[in-house]
Length: 402
Figure: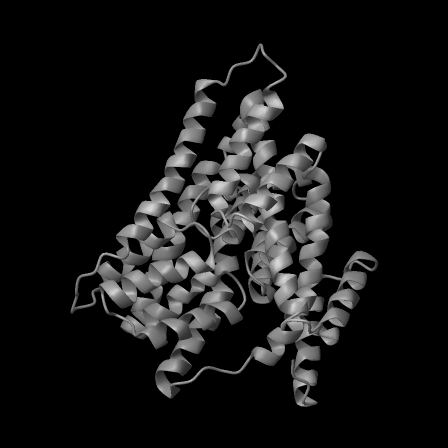
């Protein structure tokens, strides 16, 4: 009993801290989680972490939140699943709720851009460190390298949807990896799982189309608000840009609950607060229906992540038990690292080269110093985030602008 409580306490402390310092989006959050639970605390192997990451990329919901839930379940059981998810989400929800109150009562948003200016390059160093470690484990052979390169091409050159690219990498990679063994045929279980994953990706496309169907609703009920965000949380793939499409189609065009400017302000809040960007729902819920609306919207959008993760986690070891589905996992894992690489390139470009032919040397310096402190001296990511924020504030105070 004491051991269980001790583990729950460890989970709560860790993920509440990560929820506070979790700037930079899902890739940054996953890098911080990997640094804490694999590198520092050794709660799981890097291989197991990669398996969970690859599988999580194929289900709806915020990947970093679901990784937190996975870790909580692995380390502390069912209660750990709940505690990890709630503690990771809670700081973002509370901070977003405070900003929503300020916005409704005073009509403006706090200026935090100077802090984010210093935080982003520091977080970039954390991401690069995790990308290197995960890449070494995922890219096990020339075949794996080729699969990763193929997914990068699909994402960068063909601009393919992330989930579709991962499925293509996983399925074709599985076939290629197992093609040399003619005595094995794909088991029905593997076919069933892959078919369901593909159906889930198609369901996402259907849901986006449905969100654009317009009709007018005059009264906002908590039930309708909660069901809207429950639907979004149940079918949301693809991160922030897809979230904007859902919210624009539903809240502005379909129901008319928000103005275009209110939606833009809500998205801005989600971008510059720590933790999962889906905390935008808290801000929107508060604008529409006060504290009750904030609670209902937040529960609605995050609840499916707990449900999907609880179903998925026990399946991952079973996927490893079959040669075909194990090959599928390997291919999906290396595809997920390729996706992480592409997102990191985009983040590096916008952070270090904010304008064409212009390199921000202060941001480059922050990133390099953070990388040295992290890799050489194993400084915790929390100190890098706080240090970056301080440098950003000092630079702003001295009149430095990009």
